[in-house]
Length: 220
Image 1 (cartoon, rainbow, N blue to C red):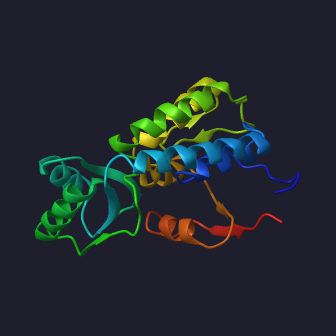
Image 2 (image 1 turned 60 degrees about the vertical axis):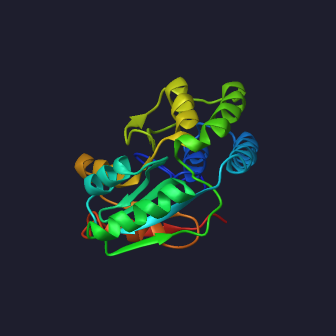
């Protein structure tokens, strides 16, 4: 980002939370790469334990999706709160498929099973959480130069130990991105800059507040 990178807050969606922490000086680049690699390997191992998947649910309120998932036999939970009207669910294959049918009946505009081989951000990632916890406990996490709004609670954090524990919990907890964007708006943030290729996160932000300026910044 260069020496002029001076945000008031940072946040990252799922894996991007590690990038955000590196950008804010709370984690070294090389150590961040090691943690991301360990996270990927741990999640892959967890995926092989139980047939599992995810599905995108469009056009329903979050509470309705949560209630329907709670009524389904088996493991299926809300995993990614991406923006109002877009929530990804995660769990065992039969449970996700049953939830999709029930959600369509409840009025979902679309319920799309995603081409993924795991139930990320669900209780089925517990083996991955345990493995990543070992790596994170050994990692040198510092106080970032600005607060990082974390996925598990959509709350700004600067305490290295709190950040560490939230990163561990992230694997089995939902990504509260909608709540993170709503927090930015409530806090009075005046501009949002998406770092990296594409404009996916900017598009999600426009679903929360279309009037707030957004921009892209690609790391050279």
